Image (cartoon, rainbow, N blue to C red; front, side, top):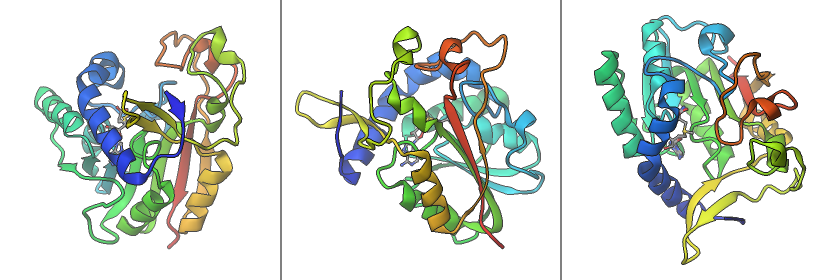
Length: 261
Ligand SMILES: C[S@@+](CC[C@H](N)C(=O)[O-])C[C@H]1O[C@@H](n2cnc3c(N)ncnc32)[C@H](O)[C@@H]1O
């Protein structure tokens, strides 16, 4: 693993390959926590049912960008919304289809890149993602522009990502993850690569200011920035997320934005 700049095409290939190859393991490890029909924003366990960050849902056309197994979209359907679940990875969408069959809740699944959304302008009232697409694309400002394009004026865009300050630390849920080792200001992505030096996994770091500037520069209005606290009694870990670290500093940032009318 290393930190280095990676061109957009190499990023796309790495992401597609990674999420296809990892889909079974990811769902085996996290599927029970995420549920078949549930909207969990983050490893802290904040649910849309409690947070209500998306606003009104009944009758709303909602795009879930980077949906994974699409449990959020199925939950949205049970709330009367009209969701469409989109992901770059066929492996993840296979799990979405299986979960639909298990749960009996079916939503349209679209296999596409979030950087080239196959929808008309203003096709959606709301867009959302829990850790999908945004942390992985090389040009996240371009993703903001695509989401802005497909939202109607007054539409809402809510996305969760790893909290930028986590990038200061090692990906260690234990004591080793409490010591600052990286510069917050170094925005080179985290890269795993094969023996030939080709990227196999790429995750992008943006500072809080970068994220705000990308939203505002696109024309969004920032409504809220939610930093979920680690809840009492939650003893589970998810990769680098743990009760030990969660009680000290935020692990997730959820950006709530609106396209002005
Ligand atoms: C951490 S998962 C989040 C999915 C789901 N919310 C969950 O919690 O399991 C990240 C998802 O983003 C998808 N993704 C990555 N890059 C993407 C892109 N450029 N366009 C669409 N989806 C992308 C991946 O395929 C993967 O399913």
